[in-house]
Amino acid sequence: MSTEQTFKRITTKALGLLKKKGIKITALTAYDFITAKLLDQAGIDLILVGDSLGMVFQGNETTLPVTMDEMIYHTKAVTKAVNRSMVVVDMPFMSYQLIADEGFRNAGRIMKETNASAVKLEGGERVADTIKKISDAGIPVMGHKIPAALAKQVTESLTIPTIGIGAGMHCDGQILVTPDMLGLNVDFHPRFVRTYANLADECTKAFTNYINDIRKLKFPSEDESY
Image (cartoon, rainbow, N blue to C red):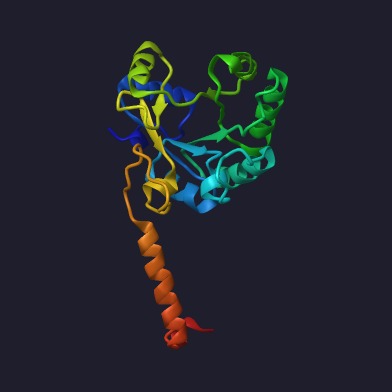
């Protein structure tokens, strides 16, 4: 059953209905307009603007340096491209951990400035007050990943959907980092990633052909000039 035939716009209610119907939720990351547009057109249910951009986009060793301003900047680009997918935003490190009020303000800022549909944060019980404060204000909140056996128990005990990354097949949906599943990130091979393309090689070939065409005076041709 295609979710494209079911929902014109993915919302929290739509995700709940997908779980109820036993239709698996699909999710991938995006940090830019073009990638988000392609994901949306392909029918991805949920697009996460992840703090993983700190590594795959900025070249940092961890996600820790990512700022609120950077998350908002990238999310603005993503939401401009999306017509159907639900956009969720990672709250970066130290944007919510100190006190609940700070997390609430930053979540509100994200929603107000980006047109996203939800925020995502980590921490379990220690951020429960923050989550309650944010959700009480009407802002949907997504939590973080757990091991497969526990994910199965949680998924079966909750009415809200679960989305896994390395958390097994019993979650209500799955997410991967898009550059990883496209084979663009050649230095990162965690066990939970399935590679669906080898775009690093394809890109290298295209770049090499472009360089060779220019140096051999094969590009541009008369037809490609004004």
